Amino acid sequence: MLAPIVLFAYNRPYHLYQTLQSLMNNDLADQSELFIYADGPKENASSIHLKNISGVRKVIRERQWCKRVNIVESEINKGLANSITSGVTEIVNKYGKTIVLEDDLITSPYFLKFMNDGLNFYEKEDKVASINSYFYPTKRKLPETFFLSWPDCWGWATWKRSWSLFEPNGRKLLHLIKSQKLESELNVNNSYDYLGILKNQISGRNESWAIRWHVSIFLKNKLNLYPGKSLTVNIGHDRTGTHADFEQRFRMQKFNMQPGKVTNIPLTESGEAILAFRDFFTKSSIYKFHQLFDKIKHSL
Image (cartoon, rainbow, N blue to C red):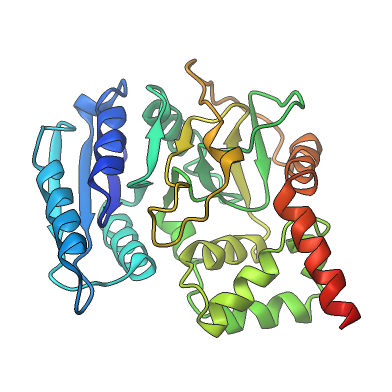
């Protein structure tokens, strides 16, 4: 049985249309069931904000995007984190597995095939926690598929057994990271500040569900499957999203237009993929900015 798809939308009708159009063009879309969760307006929302939310709900009904489409509209604003955690929980509890998208992701025509192949292939392998579709652009030659110890959130899939490991309490996660002295490892040898994102979630500076999912799986020593070439592109880094920062380097990437194969590979992290991840972030302008900021802060 194909995994149900769950899509979370809010107030970006133009982005959502592109997401749904690309999903409809997937090989297995006409055989798949889609659940769309549309979040509601915030209190005292502006007229433009309300118009965009109305536009989203119009786009949802514009076409028969998959074989079957189920629409769940909230009258109030739950926020992205609450929408995703409750929506994913609802679907995996009912179906045992799910494929997850947000309203700013364009998918390759083979996205659904890779997700379903991965879910079926590793369904009984407890060591594997999730199937992912995105990896950062790199000049390094990566294998067709590989594992990393952390999941991604730009098009992913999981099972009920893995989602049950999700720990919503950021403070608890931070305590576990510190008590096990895993700060550097979590930050991929200090190439990206995941720890800082978690601390910001705890302090209320962000509402990230993704960092808590990331750390939850990392702490359980699970593995997450990735394709050597991405099957999604994020189009939300244009300052239109509630939680999106503008990063041109993400927008420049193209996804794989060839079907990736899920095969039996060793259950271990890919050293080459870790190096590619470190290359991407340590050579980026934002990383250098953070380095400079940290030096200034330390000197003060």
